[in-house]
Length: 362
Image (cartoon, rainbow, N blue to C red; front, side, top):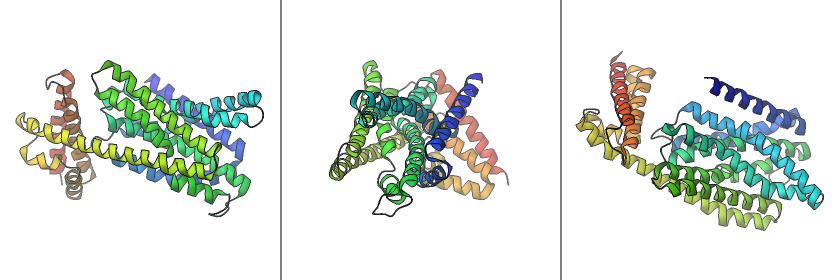
């Protein structure tokens, strides 16, 4: 209890520090303008990661903690180190050299490490909540969404302070929003999910070397993408930026989308393959196999129960569905009688009994 409370206190202090820094740099009015602009893209980004995470939804408190760490803890860490790198760069390379060092070297290395630290922490200390690629992508995406939210507050606020709202074809908040909020809202998540994919691979492999190599390679790819993006904006011209955007970022984004689609189909297959054994063991009735094997049917089942017996009954059915999924994921490639598997099987029995009882109430 003491450690989580201490962590929340530290995270709260980081949040206070970040927003105090933003207020000092751009002022309260500009900060509020920046916050308004930052809120618009962050909602759809978070919604996408929650949609991805539908087969076995991660605990809401961990997802929002990931977002908060990205928005506060990772951001404050990056601010402190990047500002130091900027000062050192100015001393070594002359005025303006620090901006380049901070953007192209320090920011990719430090920001990706700070965001990835939360994902790695979940993998190491909450191993039961980390089952593979989708979990790595979701935790990394939520953390990066939080980071991008705070960064956008600063960028939009600073641009408002310097240029006002502007128009779509001139410097100002409107142009910045089109670039950051419309054209590239997934930029930070795209970088960081590379590390999340690496950690997701580590969570599923039995090869010790790959457990180390995959997260490291994922982090290096995240850094490389981040450096290319920042370098195009800092060192190149408009043509350079558009080339990096269309020839690098868009293909990587599409590749990540294909990987997510494959991983979600694989999760569905794991659940479907496990259901016959669960029926044989008496954990799941044969009549519920089709209802549990499809996300669409699961959603319809919950909706029907909510309509008939109320929200509590709908939640009980959702808990039962998640328990079945967790057991299926756990048994994928493992013996069925290990201690953790027995606990998960008992969770299926209890959750189903609770769902049946709740659905039977009027």
